Image (tube, rainbow, N blue to C red):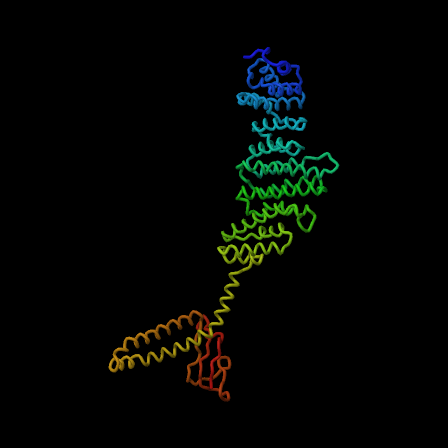
Length: 488
C-alpha cells in the first residue's frame, strides 16, 4: 500500500477531505472527483482514508437527515462502484437498506450527473414502490437526457409489460404540474423527450406488449395535455406529435402482436386533432409515411387470413391528408396482392364490406336464367334426335351389315353418342327444373300463357308447331313459362 508521501499534495488534500466524517456531501463529491482524476482510484482503493470515506457515504445513504444529502450519498456510492468495479456487488448489498422506503424526489439533486447515478442505483433495486418512483422521476426530469434514459430503462426492466410502463407514465405525467407561464408547452416538451427515451429503450427491450397497449399510449399522450392545456408553441407541438408517431411505428415494428390492432393507432387520431388543421404539417411527412406502410402491411396480414377490419382501414384516411389518397392506397393494395380472396380485395377496392356471396349468387342465377331458353331448345332438339335414333337404330344397323359392313361400327358409335347427348341434356334441364309443354303436331286447347298463334286466326284448338319451355314446381306441376311455344 502506498503511503501518503507518495501522493501529490492535491491528492493528499482530497484523501483527507474524503475520509473525514465532518465533510459535507458536496465536498466529498469533489474530493472523489479529484481522487479519480489524480489516479489514486482505483489503484489505491484499499487505502484507509478511502475506506473511511466509503463507510461515511454508505452511512449517509441510510441515515442522513437532509433528503438531498441522502440522495447524493446514494449517487456517490454508485459512482464509487463505477471507479472501483470490484466493490459493486458488496456496496450494492450494503445500499439495500437505503431503499426500504420510497426515496425523496430526484429533483433535489441539482446536477444531472448526480441524478444519472441515482437512477443507476434505482435500476439495481427492484422494490415494489420503484416503478411509480421512476415514472414520477421521468415526468419531473427537465434536462438530463442520460438520466431520463437510465430511468426509462430501469422502469422497463422492472415492469411486467409495456402497457404497464405506459400506464405508470400516464399517471405520473397527469399528476405533474409544470410551474411555468405556458404549462401546455412545457408538458409537450417533457412528453416528447420521455417518448424519445422510451423509443431508444425499446431497441434493446424484449418486454411483452401487454393488454390494451394502444389505449395506454393514447392515455399517456392525451391525459397530461388535457390537464396542463393544449400546447401553443408550434415547434413544441410538432416535436411531440413526431415522437408519438414514431413511437407507434417503433412499437408496430417490434411488437408484431399489436400491429393489426386498430386501438394502437388511436393516438394518431388524437395527434391530428391536436394539430387543429384540416391537414398534417409538412414536417411530419416522413413519420406519417412510415405509419402508412405499417397500416398497409397490417391490412395485408389480416387479409391473408381472410379478415377485414374497417377501423384499421379507416386509419389510412387519418394518416393521409386527402381521403382520395387513402382510397387509392387501398385499391393499390388490392391490385398488388392477387393472393387475397375476393371478399378482401373487393373490400379494399370499395372501402366497405359488401355481401359479395349474395351478389355473386344473384349474378349466377341471372346468367343461368338467360341460358334457360337455350337449354329448353336443346332439350327439344335432344328429344327429337333421340326419337329418330330409336326409330332408325335397328333398321339402319341391319341394312349396313348387308350393304356396307365397314360403316356399322361408326354408325353404332353415332347412335350411341346421340343417346348419351340426349341423356346429358335431359339431366341439365332437370337440374334447372325445365320441361317442354306440348308435342309438335298434337292438337291441343290453346292457352295464351303458353303459346303464341302464328299463321292464322286463333281458335280454341290448334296444332302445336313448337312446344313451350316451362319451369316445373317442386310438386311436379307447371310453374313459370320460360319461352312461349308456337301454335297454328
